[in-house]
Length: 204
Image (cartoon, rainbow, N blue to C red; front, side):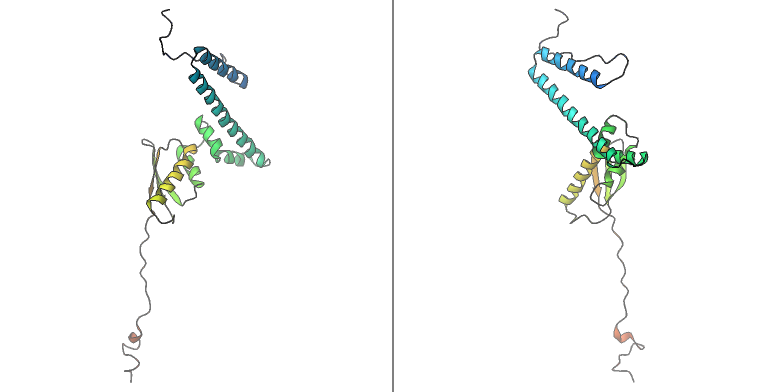
């Protein structure tokens, strides 16, 4: 048949969304089943297994996010709506889900600040280049010996922390802490300076 896909062509696995545009658990489950059935009918066992694994991973991810949200909300049932929202926005897993779907109310710089609040290193933001995705940080205190291994460890920790809150950040550059100017030590003069410059032995 002229309309049949050629050998090796990927099968069509698209499923039509509900006409009303509404999505619920039943509709989503049906659409997923349709996609998996089409893959199974294609005879491509590897693709079918990969799709099933993808569905499983996503289900675990979203399930963990929902469980965390329920835990945070139930942890302080008498908390104000503002405090509850702050707890949700400050949680790495929940914030990651909100950012993924464009639902996080904070801009990228505020989300970066939220992430760095939980970093166990004294750093401050020097600047973020939205065009390149580079986040520049500066040490604000002692972080060990200052060797390359320490710097790389802090940079990696910052990347890991920021990843969920601000995926716009693609690289982290760490600068050394600004050096404080040396203080001039002012002490008492030498003993022979007392009494007009004469030592006690020569005084009359």
